[in-house]
Length: 133
Ligand code: CO
Image 1: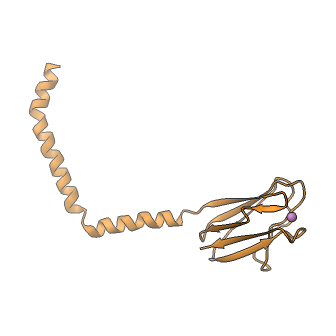
Image 2 (image 1 turned 30 degrees about the horizontal axis):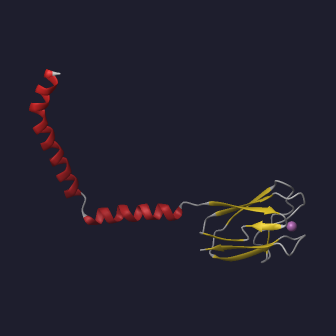
Image 3 (image 1 turned 90 degrees about the vertical axis):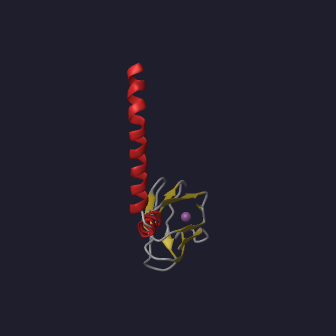
């Protein structure tokens, strides 16, 4: 115990000087341009992290019927009904799941911005919208 205090009494001033030198150096090297580029890198990586959103088909409806995502995000539909449904884009050739049995899933990655309306082929009254920003 006594030895530790003795060591601290002599080394503490040196530790303090070392800490202030390190913080001074950090301030000098961290000029505003470096800080700005580091900040923008963080923002960019947040924007490019793709999300995966799930839409449930249940009781002859898409839920949520409308959702907003970002370019690059993926939507996965899962059929929770006892009957077969499809996820079919209103614009031909965009996406079409084909027949989805119970618990079957279909995923589609949206690579461009726009409003994408879709429906179920056997039940045209089942409609949904994906807004890609
Ligand atoms: Co259907």
